[in-house]
Amino acid sequence: KVNEFVTIEGPTEVCAGKPYVLNAIGKNLNYYEWTRNGVPLPAYNGKASIDCTDTVPVGQPSAEVVYGVKAVYDNNCESDTTFTVTIYAKPTDLTINGIQGPGAMDSVCVGSSKQLSVMPINGSSLTGASYLWNGVGITNQTAATQTITPTVAGIAPYSCQITLPGGCDTTILIDLKAVPLPELSVCKDTTICTGGTAMLYLTAKNNCPAGTTIVWTSTGGGGGSGDTIYVSPTTTTTY
Image 1 (spheres, rainbow, N blue to C red):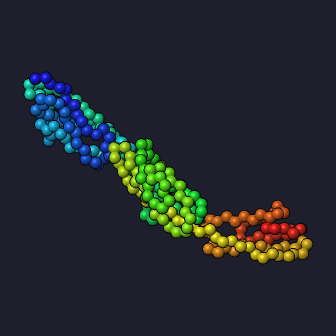
Image 2 (cartoon, rainbow, N blue to C red):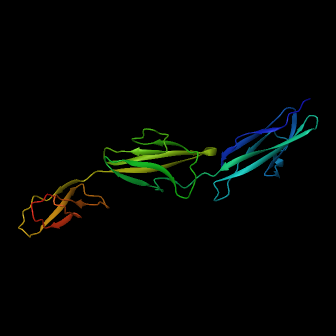
């Protein structure tokens, strides 16, 4: 009989906690002894396949596990080999736009654009990641970054399923709030005496959201900030 050297077949990259199977391959084999990182696995003695489930030490993005098998042929000759599997930790720190937790929400003005991007907050690597986005206005589901331009006010949900090497996948969610632009108006034309002062004020229908910056300009080069300003032009001026 002609013997073949034993080999091991199976996945080389696996997500932590995900079961997988390794198989010893070769002709005329009739007995097997398996090891994991050099430690014997007597429960699998005599078996051509081994069921595996591995983890990654806390704080590490990945770890390598080395499986070995010694095979005995019908003529009592032996052959052995090893097989290395890279185990990847499933990330738990991924967010969209750095916002995480229940009710995660970002905002954008109606008619303006907002980018949505997957961001790790504790340094998880996105190397080799694939993406699957869902939501209103998504035009390329597999792009890493999405640009959303809402045309109406309201709240729309978005999700992204990220798949990393080894088959680790997770889905993250965010709501995008489209804020209507306030309808602005200023006080009526005002007449003042030379050297006098006029109070100019702004009103906004739909209100201005918190954090709004208001800047006044004029044909005379002056201006100001805030919803109310006081001016003393020396000639007719438009604000």
